[in-house]
Length: 176
Image (tube, rainbow, N blue to C red; front, side, top):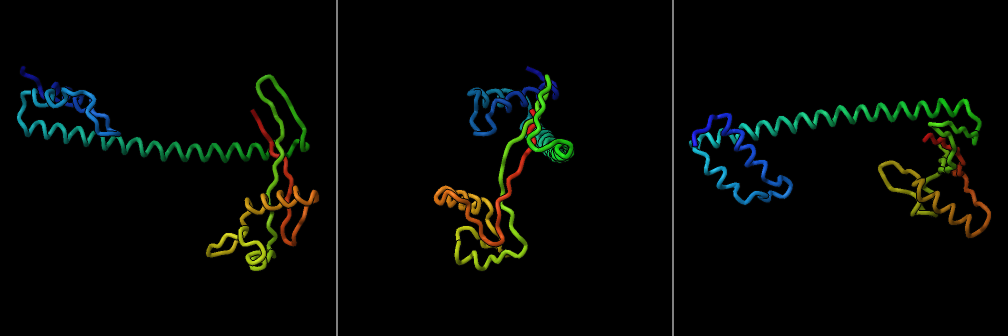
């Protein structure tokens, strides 16, 4: 069998594509025979495999660059969606709903913890250590604080508020 260099490269690529690259497992048991059966010099085989590796590395670099580009595009798109939702919400009354044949505007209630600037985290560190996360700068763990206040409200049946912390109810626009 007398093959051209192009045909040899194609056969080598086909043989190498028979490897599961995630596990390294040879899917085609005759892979060694396919590579060894090609009537080419050892150096040509090594050269062709090296060129194929270079091709795959370039392809990987190209995919990586595309991922960076698409990630930037997604972030830009998400920012635009957020801005447009805020813009639309500024024209609507809280809770005002619209239903069109191809779009629905509704609202979802949510709540979040708002931390006052003058909140004494040192006091909270000793009174409620699980609510204060220790970092280089002390911050209130808002998720834990919200759960804590909701648990306290369920136990006491009336909301308990502490100086410097409040729960703010919000309306979040939803477009489907």
